[in-house]
Amino acid sequence: MGIKDVVLGLVIVLVWGFNFVVIAWGLQTMPPLLMGSLRFLLIAVIGSLFVVRPQIPLKWLFGYGITLGFGQFAFLFSAMANGMPAGLASLVLQSQALFTLLLGGLLLAEAIKTYQLVAIMVAGGGLALIGWSGNGEAMTAVGFGLTLAGAACWALGNIVNRSISQQGYKAGVGLVVWSAWIPPVPFFICSYLVEGPVSIIESFQQISWLAVGALLYLAFVASILGYSLWSYLISRYPAGQIAPLTLGVPAVGLTSAALFLGETVSLVQWTGIALVVFGLVINMRGEQWLKRLWASKRVELDL
Image 1 (cartoon, rainbow, N blue to C red):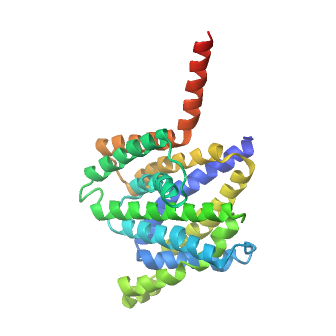
Image 2 (image 1 turned 90 degrees about the vertical axis):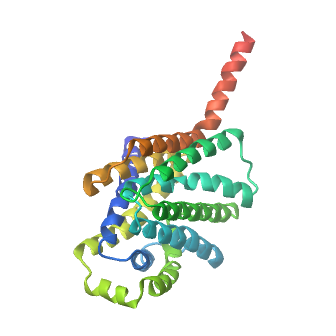
């Protein structure tokens, strides 16, 4: 990978990691479901002016928009509004890789290998440790559970993405932009029913520059710029070489949350974080490790 592409990869990690701090700032002055609706409305209205609509059937745009758009961020934003620290949210959300593995086996009949089962157990143990260590001051059970639900929705979106690719359609940044027309509708409906019209009106009347800045960052920097760069790298390099970049997102998320939000992580939670990261590494590198191990054994036998 050239220096320019390495820099672009680091930009993605920084943008997506800092994204969780920006969400926390936005939630200070705006209810979560309303913020989600405005985020995707901005992506759809502005992005569709510059990005050509992908030749993908409407049902797949709907499926992607509902799962990875509405489902993931409705749960994530609500989790962070209900006691889930930004730093830990950036880590727990990465459990989508494990949910994707399980759902791929259930819905797409993809084989789950032994090392992948080990990865699930290791990372699952880490998530259990993080959830068990939570307390009313640092993390709530509701916030933790909603974040896991958001990760599961992200995984469902990955399954939809795979199905789109398997049918021969290209799923790049165009899919992200044009599927963004779907989430604002359920977001607005849920905001009206859950948060109430009074809260919605007050949010618009009292909207701050912090909220506006957060929405612009979430829509254009984290979504359009982030996914554009991601699609560019995925198109140039093997997925196995690019996917590990996501492991840097929690590192940036935890660090920036400590610097800008004053969040702290307990020793037990750090232990859980280490287990989750190790489980994700096993999932991505396990096959290569086994091949190297098998190759070294064959050399020993030949000798």
